[in-house]
Amino acid sequence: MQSVQTKTELSFARLIGVSMTGKLLVDIGAQIFNPFLPVIAAGLGMSVVELGRLVGLRSAMGVFAPVSGALADRHGYRPVIRSALWLSAAGFLLLGASSAAWMVVLAMVLSGLGIGAFVPNLQAFVSSRLPYALRARGLGMIEYSWALTGILGLSLIGVLIAATNWRAPFFLLAAGMLVMSFVFGAMPAAPRHRTPTIGSNEQPRGWLQKIADVVVIPSNRRSTYATILAGALSYFAAMQVMIAHGAWLAQDYGLDAAALGLVAFVFGWFDLAASVSVSLFTDRIGKKRSVLIGVLGSLIGYLLMPFLNVGVIPAIAIIGAARMFFEFNIVSHFPLLSEQTPLHRGQTMTLGAAVSLAGATAAGFTGPWLLVHAGVAALAWSSAAIVTLSLAIVLFLVQERPGSAE
Image (cartoon, rainbow, N blue to C red; front, side, top):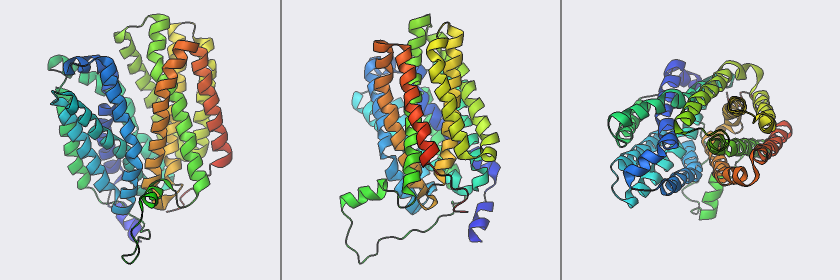
């Protein structure tokens, strides 16, 4: 009874509105280097390659996300979410004020730790506040922020940079994140299931045991790990194409930076269509079934890419379609994963994020290399092979556990 009463203290509109606003700021911060890497690099006195490597360092900080998940399961999601926003704000503030390389490195580490902890713990927080029957709707809606970043956020950042300088967006993002940390602090705490803790009379746990506390799922292991692996494989396959698609379109069709920016705007609408579809349909047709639909659709897209690489419009259309199905898959994947081990939701969601990040990091090496050395067909069909494995894992190993903790 207490759990039900606690959940009614926070309306659906407030939960989603606050979560979407916070995630929009974080998503803009995560994607700001994609179109503006040369501008920011020039402002810092660095080469594009040097700053690109530091952006990679920022992404690599996501491997520490499971630590934040273990802390969230023990102390609550809101303190971890707020801490993640403070870390991100500190990183962006330091980056905006940077005048030396060590400041940029430290800024990337701080913002990377914050971004890596914020998103999966936010998803766990939202999941804990929503019944399973509404979870895809809620998580799908907060993912609108990813699409809105491409459609609106980065466009406004470009206008702001043109009107002021490259530093201004980082200061504004830092201020916005600090404000949102207080907004999250004013929200009711999520209901938490108490898990056994180590007694005061027991011996201190060694570092191997502490690592196990982060990476070993206590229950429903086969399905949970399978769900995490399937999501990471799909993410790796998609990122191979996404990382290389700009070079592909520039190489084959001569698109310049302005044209590629327009392509990003178009892809934002594909992303939005996918997230809206999740919020409308996934709860009705089932999370696992939605993931299967998304994986199968992206598989068909990857298979067709070489055949439709006959003109710029067909090429953009098939990349966008594959991206849309991937987005439908991965956003449906979040609520599916959220109910695999409800008592350890923070640990599960952050572990999934860390493994997917490892896949994205690997894709940064394989995608461009395949495009340059083997062409579009090798790039697309290798992604098709990877999502075929993901499809088999979801089909045979993943179990949907509707409302197991409600």
